[in-house]
Structure formats: C-alpha cells, structure tokens
Amino acid sequence: MKIFFTCLGLTKKFKYPHEAREIIKRVVKEENKQLGEIGIVFTDNQNILEINKRYLKHSYFTDVITFENSIKGLISGDVFISIDQVHINTVRFGTKSGEEIFRVIIHGILHLIGYTDEYEQDREKMRRKEDTYLEFLENWIRRTDDEFMV
Image (cartoon, rainbow, N blue to C red):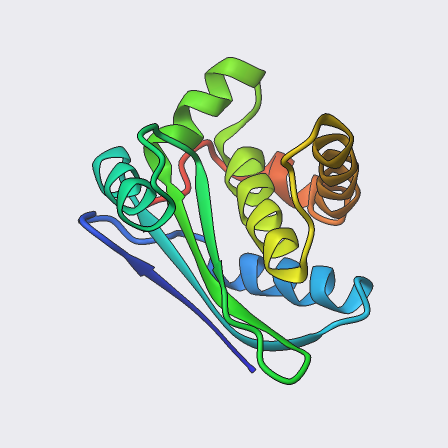
C-alpha cells in the first residue's frame, strides 16, 4: 500500500498529505476495497487540459482526471487534480479551499473504486458519498486556513 503526492508544473507542494492519506484509506476501507498504490498529482489548468486532450480526447478544463490501474482487487491508479479548477470551484460553490481539495481527492478515489458520474443519478450518488466522507474531516477542515498548497 502506497499513497504518494507529486506536483506537475507547480512550484508549491500539497500542505496536507497526512490528512489526505487518512481520508483515502478510510474511503477505500468503507467501500470494502483494498488499497494498492495511488498517486495524487497536483497540476494546473494547462496540464490538465493537455492530459484531457491527449488521453480522453476532451478539449476542456476539469478539476480531476483519474487513470485506474487496479490489479487483483487492489485499488490503484493516478488522480490528476487541477488546483486552478479547485480554486474556481470554491468560488462557484462557495466552499473553503480545504473542503474543496478534499472533495476532489475523494471524488477521484471514488472513480478509482468504480463510481462514475456520466449521468445525473450517478453524479448525485457520488456527491452523497463525497459529503459522507467529508463529514469525517469536518472539524479538521474548519480549523485549516484557506490555502492547501505551500
């Protein structure tokens, strides 16, 4: 089991890897899965757009892209997160940056587990799951400042 964090095209680093590891482990456990190797890659809009175009043939910005690589029942893969889009989400949804970055991390992990958000009912199901898992971090999120990269 390994969870690692890296930045692509950014000079800053993720400020809360310990808390993110804990919530990732919790999501995987609560979903009755086993944790394999997961990479969380923070990047910017330009890189996320390139990844989206190259691998998914989509020409738009997004907050998260996942590449699932599970083997023998172990949840594994890479989760690419655009910090630019996370900041846009905070304005759009009126959330704190700390809450939004963890929502996007959880969303990516749910994709690795097998959840989809292609249809409205799937998006609603994922949102309920995200809300449930965010509750585990609620007190911590309230104590954090609004910046998640240093």
